[in-house]
Length: 235
Image 1 (cartoon, rainbow, N blue to C red):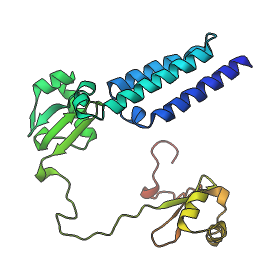
Image 2 (cartoon, rainbow, N blue to C red):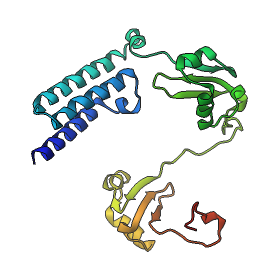
Image 3 (spheres, rainbow, N blue to C red):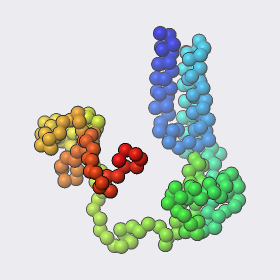
Image 4 (cartoon, rainbow, N blue to C red):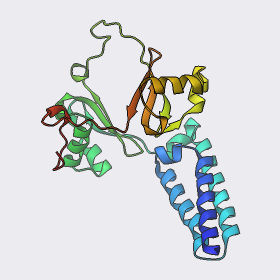
């Protein structure tokens, strides 16, 4: 029981401290972000092996405070350049920057792989490619090779509407219903109208036309129809 207790406490404390840290430490890993995660992980996992649960929690709290101070200091421009590395230019105006590649310790084949992931196959079409401090590769194509935008064609497009989930995995999303000014009775009526059951619905979303779209767990099978092809031997 004590082992279970320690494991649960360590997990909950670690989760709490990561929530207090914020999303940035997990989503954008800078150098000190990685260091923080490594240190915190080692500290909070120590009580699983030895008898110092209290000290580990205190040390973890101190580590979180230090990290939060560093993040706050990084908001000041004068200190930002000490805490963050500078972006490294890899391609400029279609020309590969060899010094940049050497600084980033990146072989050309790896650079080309990153470009393919971004949807580019020819380095000559790129205005600038930069390795950010997080390790991500930012690619900006030359004007003549960027995707065509509706504004370029002088087209007027309607505002993008984000479908609002009302049912997910058979569970009703009550706060979204409340946000839309709807109630359970309305939802159940719509579900019944479509001949469905809430527990069988994988996803139901509220559309711009104020109608409900339902994706249930049923998979349509149409033999020999190319539109329903499945890779593998299950056809």
